[in-house]
Image (cartoon, rainbow, N blue to C red; front, side, top):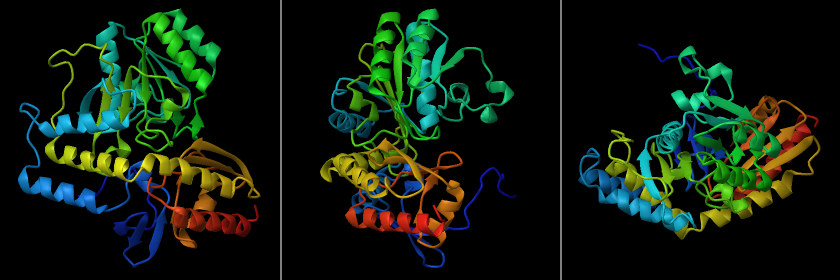
Length: 379
């Protein structure tokens, strides 16, 4: 048997990781400025994380959601303490960002009795059925995913949002406060405030997809909190457990729960909760949300005036850099010559999603390598 060939792979296999660094099979050290696609929040192999998982596995790693699991309650309390203003919300645990969005939209439909969803152009919400339907990318829509129950408007077009919502009854509006795959496009405060206002006026639930932008990455626990808006449902994943597959939604107390309306086999297992609890503890104790804000500002300040940089967008440690050369060329030099891992978001956009614990040493190394790469490529 062979692997199903759906990934374009870099010619590099990491075999060890610690903090913000990776080592490949040849012992070459890489600075990780991509965090495994925004997943590594507290750094690779954090000792507290390793300890909590190891200890939990020596006791019980899994049992189903048919029994009491006090670790789920503990995790809910810790997330509530980090997500200021959401302390009275409820937590539902699952396994991934796509599953979190799937359950968020299902819950909105259950609650409102409505069947339509309004999504944003350029959005990416996952690869399960409804998550694909609200993703603005026909290339990942199989025929079975097609539906006429989703409409799209442009991000930050307040009038289009208002006009569409007033046309008919929508169960939910789903918004990434910072579009990741869409090019690190930041939803404006005005747009998010308009969404909240019109959702309230039309009985529509406001869903914030914080799968990539959440968990401290933007310099606030949730990126939409920069605008002062409060959502009805917030989806999370990626950084919540530092690589262990955990997804979640937090749900307004105004939304009633009914037995059996949502469910999962593996979601919220003992081992998953131990991983997520360890992350929450490190985020709080090491002040990683504030660190993400400060280090993000230093990165932007260091690169914004480099020749060939056309634009820099984002917040905290979720940064998009529009280049005058293809990002593939730029990333290749960064990786092969300077041993720095980065990501992409379109043909000319470099995407940075480093661990939230990076320090000034790592930022300095990146900025110097970025400037050298720009010079080497004649930008």
